[in-house]
Amino acid sequence: MENIDWKELGFGYLKTDWNARSTWRNGAWSPLEITQDEYLSLHMAATCLHYGQEAFEGLKAFRGVDGKVRIFRLEENAKRMIRTAEYTMMALPTMELFREACVEIVKRNERFVPPYGTGASLYIRPLLIGSGAQVGVKPATEYMFVVFVTPVGPYYKTGFKPISVMVDRHHDRSAPLGTGFVKVGGNYAASLLSGDMAHKAGFPGVLYLDACEKKYIDESGAANFFAIRDGAYITPKSPSILPSITNMSLRTLAADFGLRVEERPVEFAELPTFEEAGSCGTAAVISPIGKVYDPDEGKTYTFGDGATPGPWCVKLYEALRGIQLGEKDDVHGWNTVL
Ligand SMILES: Cc1ncc(COP(=O)(O)O)c(C=O)c1O
Image 1 (cartoon, rainbow, N blue to C red):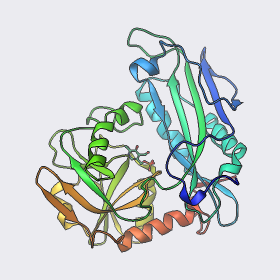
Image 2 (cartoon, rainbow, N blue to C red; image 1 turned 135 degrees about the horizontal axis):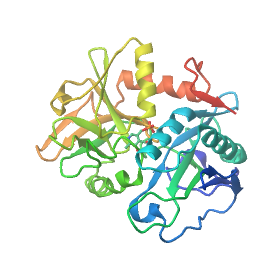
Image 3 (cartoon, rainbow, N blue to C red; image 1 turned 120 degrees about the horizontal axis):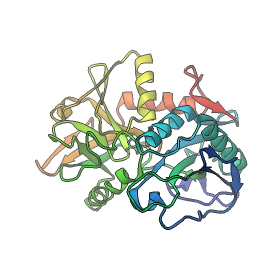
Image 4 (tube, protein in one colour; image 1 turned 60 degrees about the vertical axis):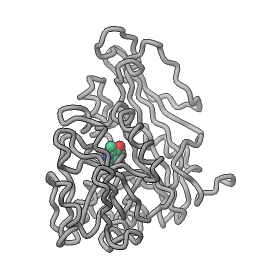
């Protein structure tokens, strides 16, 4: 693509050529429709608009060192969308539908897969919405599944440099028995205000604590939290966080490297004991956390010098990127190679 400055790409929407859609009606998904239309025609009483009956996913395709395109952990993203659909009583997309739509749309938009070495990738956004009309609070009888793609650069402007995050004890993005563990739009609507407050205070990320006691670390904006201490990879186990597929992959890589993996409730009070901290997600990849600012206590916790990624963050980042870019053997079978 002659007009795109791949190295300068941010994390935003850029129009591509094709997207895919399927409609669930009378108990079956329609054959995929491939279109150039960026708009959906929707009934004004669609349940997604009124009752938040919607789910989305986020995964990436990468141009590898060998020129091939790889989609990272497609099946895990499909499984998570199916879990979200179950919880919100939507028609379940099948694994086949999810796979076919992602693969077809990445292939058709291949000219938008950023070149190897630019640090950019093609973000894939599957979307599932209740499209049937309903006025009572009930599940819809019709659903729409959509997949579009857009090329993206780093989520944080700083790229692979430590970020500073701010603790927010005054908002919760989700509740322990609520929707935090699935990927519904409402969780993100609930996070906009605290994200905006953190940005205005000069912090690119928010650190959420558990909704009940504000004693445990939940997650960091749209990314999971992890820390390194005494040869252990430590990450919160909480009912109100989204089970990150990046985090799942990092736990495997950490174990491969001989780190002990601890997935358990992580107390905020442990923060000063960590050697390294980081946030991880499809968009953020690994963003090392240099500083955590706690406005209620007026305290800042710093990891290392606060400006240089720690050695384990670097090692895990390189291992993950290496697999995604086809530089390292995909020993766990995470890539769909097109
Ligand atoms: C709230 C939240 N937590 C964590 C993540 C990271 O998950 P993953 O690694 O599957 O992208 C995301 C992004 O999907 C998210 O939105």
